[in-house]
Length: 85
Image (cartoon, rainbow, N blue to C red):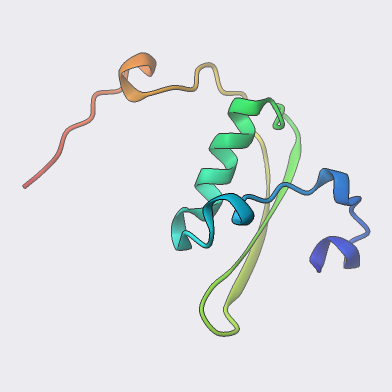
């Protein structure tokens, strides 16, 4: 695993595949949302994201977690959602 190669302690690893399965392109956003709501992500924290796809497809990137003032449904955050036909 990448965390082993980078010597990242396993207690720092977040994974949701055992709960939601491989949700394809939604896997990382679902995990980030759950981690944010659970308080596992703090502003300024470095985050390594890795994902895999069909066959031998995989990718990884790093980011610095931003300060989020409010997390919730769009109507609670003040965002207007519209659908287009």
